Length: 358
Ligand code: KG4
Ligand code: ZN
Image 1 (cartoon, rainbow, N blue to C red):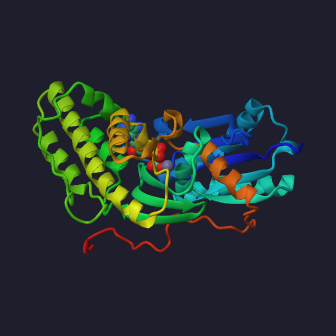
Image 2: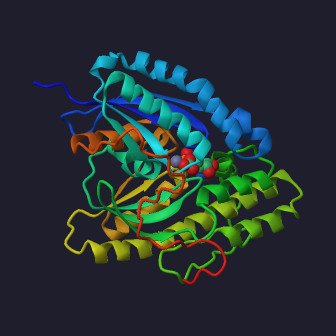
Image 3: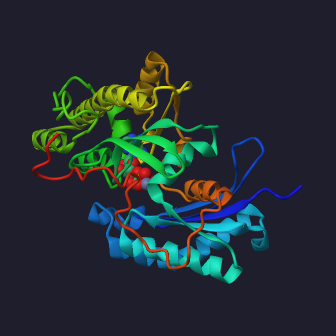
């Protein structure tokens, strides 16, 4: 019997240098043979956010070492690899080009097909690394740069149902953390602080909660957190603000998910087994997982979350998209460009900034 395809995935769109090797499996869920992630927290923490040039330089310094580690750990001989997949966008252009060029060079020197991958499609397909998942499904993508509801109709077929009109939810977590004096990226820490606080202490705004369909907004929430953070006198009040913030985000996502479920059902009227996937870095938040899985029970949807370690940026999810494209022989030529603004739904309207009508 022919050996199952093996894909090497590369991810350098932001501040993680990552390489992974996965192999297709008859169970329908591929095997992760290696999944190496090198984060750059230490490089960026003093700046309170990612500095693109420093990130790119670090990718250049590390990518070959990380690739070697991934190959060694997988136990796979390079001549057994079927294709190379690398993130081509969206992300920071100076970062994307490092992994993309490295991937193209590998594909070219090994005589393998090359596959350019949309980073967001990586998040969208990340649950396939541990669960069987059929199209179509409803996706809530919540990360540091994106907050979107999408109806995933098939590989490469996305219909955006809603998006943030200003900040991404991960960005709101990170900014709140910064205001509370927590090091970047503070999202996971806010979740911990919230456990010790009184979530009813501060009343925070939920912008466009009753209008704009399933579009979302977090900028007003951030401004309110800024205002309150200036009045904070002790650690307990920091916990209370974190708890109030966490609860407000849960309520926004809950309410907007109800709307998204309605819109998904309208598009996929004959779909039998409705599934709601929540992916991206913020999907690691246990309370958000709990709230949304309870909502799914109520709405008759099956909820699927990637394992916590695959919520954030990683290359296994890039290899996952690579594997699906490989099976359909969807390859790219070596002049495939990096696209820092590569959208999943090219037909969706641009909905950011002043003057947006909802
Ligand atoms: O998907 P990701 O790793 O990178 C992007 O593509 O943006 O998401 C990173 C974001 C950061 O904003 C981080 O603070 C947030 O995910 N995050 C969390 C948690 N873990 C990571 N936010 C809230 N709760 C968490 N447990
Ligand atoms: Zn990401």
